Length: 145
Image (cartoon, rainbow, N blue to C red; front, side, top):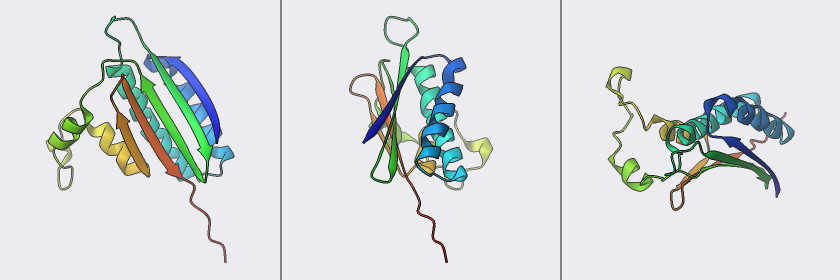
């Protein structure tokens, strides 16, 4: 498995670098334009959460670690921050369902996880030490006549 690692300050102005590097890696793996755009949204959501909630207890701006792991027909993107973390299991169990909800009924916050789950093939959140979001997308093979 090939791995590309990136470490950026946990501030919004560096998130373009994450999207650009994702585009480069995903293009080399043969992902479609649509899949790359979906991944960019999902990874951006994970990074936005790291910027908003990933500040360590010291109060200083933290770091976000991003890794792109490719192999076996998939891309695994990990976004890790060193903040205090949160109880993902409790949060996901208490979240209201989105089905049938109008935009005016949606509560702010928490939609990023739903977006990530809708756009990626697998999403795993680990909050043991900070928060690490693992996003997996499989390369779709093109069927030709």
